[in-house]
Length: 486
Image (cartoon, rainbow, N blue to C red; front, side, top):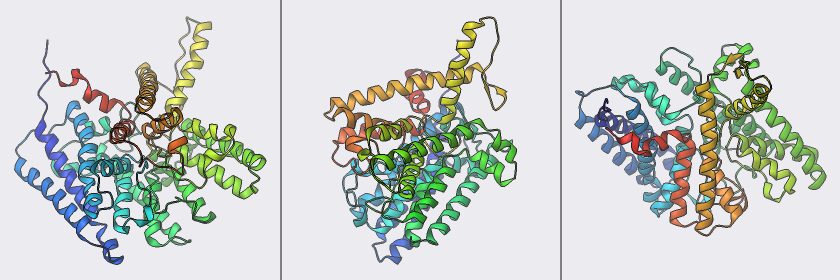
């Protein structure tokens, strides 16, 4: 029997070191806001110096004489460790500024940002220094497209191939490659991501938001994160800002490959994409249903009802988590649809979290064909997606994902109920963190937060955020005993 080769820890440490330097650079981008608002510079400056120094020391210590190939095991480890290590160092600005003096709370806030969950322990957001709020939003932005994808775009600098990192970060269902080289694909995704972010900043700035709020909300929107600079989220802004954010949430929840096709006027590929059609169909159906319900039961005007319904539907479906209304106060047959959206998620290849629409679509298609196969057992009827046959391996992957997802959800609810949370809050907190949504129901509804939870609960929910962000398999594979056997 062949033994597995040893894990190449040198390449893992080198990539993590490089990522720490990247994180330090992002920390420094908050200094202009600290200077402009006359806030202390040292929290971000010291955090960046410490983080960057640690990364640089390890990078120089390892040197250039090492095996540069990244296998599957190295890829899974790098991705899993990246989110933990980056989150650990990302707590420094919160701790040094005194905004979040408790390490558990600081780690929860940071990993919530990097996984684009948007769950928060802050009870008075507007009292936090502007520069720290900027870093909080920045964790969204660098985690949205994936810091690993960013690294893959510049890994040639280290002389390292990045395919295994992309495979580990987006297991099972990966976005289409736009270029034969994975590095070129990563660069194109990040280029589109930056383009949309800049466009949203300018459009929001042209309205009622100042430059600071425009930047922060654009970071959170394109990352489908949900951190706001205001205690009442987006509710304090007018219709113009809300409609702009709705538009860009839809963009963020769409497969970025389709944006590439749109920019190159390949509109036929967009029209043929079944996931995109279902995505828009869900938004339209639920928005209209909720609008009618609000008009009948809440005595709201047509425009206000439509805007709240559309905003909430898009925000929850894309797992952004911004709020303009407390949907828990709506009639149960209205907000139950909103709760159902939490189990769907955005499109594959988007910054959205959750199960992803394509998985639901393939599961429904396969279930329908199973009935046909029962009637015609000799017939060979493959599952088709975008006019192409889907392999049995992908269908098996989708079914396994659903089974494990539901199992983890059930375990999560049980654990939270065991530590003292009521049943509804346990359900809401579990799906809100596992689906990287942020707000849930009951005790973690749109006007609540996670501040009152025990340290154990916060660490457990942090683990669920990581599981959801890496779509289960990467983390579970690393934690399995078979992964570590030689």
